[in-house]
Length: 451
Ligand code: ATP
Image 1 (tube, rainbow, N blue to C red):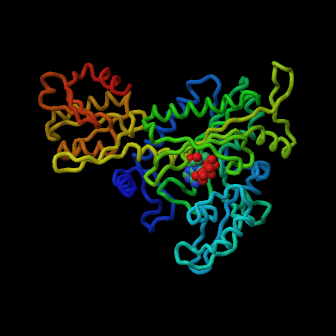
Image 2: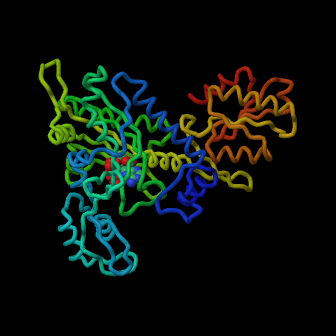
Image 3: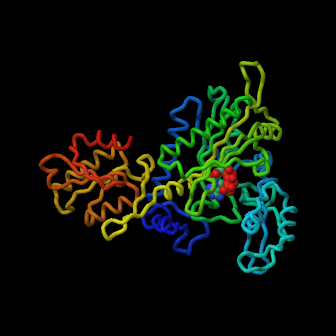
């Protein structure tokens, strides 16, 4: 993990936020490579799950909503974690995680009182200093702020803790402004905020993060089938974007472990450097959200089923993944160190779909004007179709290593012979194999490599 964090900073993927002021715990900025890679992940997700399908649309709802949204969704009352504080060092912990660490028991679904009793009966002390722990309190994870210049409680608004509520509240607007018929899905990518008690593990659990969520509306009788369909589809997509199959595993949640609204939840775990942990969750949220919003807003949120001539409230299947978590999964999935002669080569094996750059183009000798001209012209031509980087600084070996570390799949070098044979050397990041390819055929060659 330390090596990944260090590479991320060194090569401009992720920097500690507010770095010059000593940082801010669990806040991270995405640098030039990170920002590009994040965009690539989002674009692949949209391409796969929205633009290539007839039954999906994309929306972009507001982060700050009317607070009634969070009342109806249950977040004001139930979006809490059991928290306790050490009376000596004042560190705060999630009581459920502490019990799991100390006693190996899963306390999901238990009340804070029950959790408190377990802590007291087992005489669990602060894991940092051994001090006495406070009683367990439910801590709401939503960040709040005030709307307008006057500080009164009625103006309290919340930063959304999940993006999907903006989809449910727009259900009727979406039906009226599109020609969608069941089953159909609404996708959204955007920032969510959670005041996590124990954030950490680099960008795995942060206070602000981007979610990529789909709400797939279906008739109740087809919900189970659609659940399996989406789970399967995502597993295939992860393989397509380069995740190794053995790094994924499914975990079916018990009734006690599931959110109160969920009829079924499966978490897809990824093998992070700190062990298998949740990457994505799939939930059958049933008709809970549409019904709650309908009740609270007194607006009808239903669908007219032309098969039965009846209004129905559809069920919804939700595949939801954190973009930062997927980003970290891709970094650790692709990171490797290998011995080359007396040196260690760091390689980030990212798929050409995801890598910040797909091609890097170099002149072999940076001072040779002809070589420079050919390579720069090739670069400006190729960047019309591919994400390209150009580098003419330093020894060629160092330039290759730099591209290996940022995950560029192919490097193209223009050398002395290129001036005569109109061909270039193409080097593969993973095998380091070099092939001579005619400039006229370069696109065909690259396309075959990127299949
Ligand atoms: P966890 O159990 O890890 O706290 P969760 O079950 O609360 O996650 P969901 O509410 O199901 O998470 O959110 C869907 C997805 O959003 C998660 O699978 C994860 O990828 C991402 N996610 C949730 N919380 C965070 C966070 N604090 N930082 C980064 N990503 C997050």
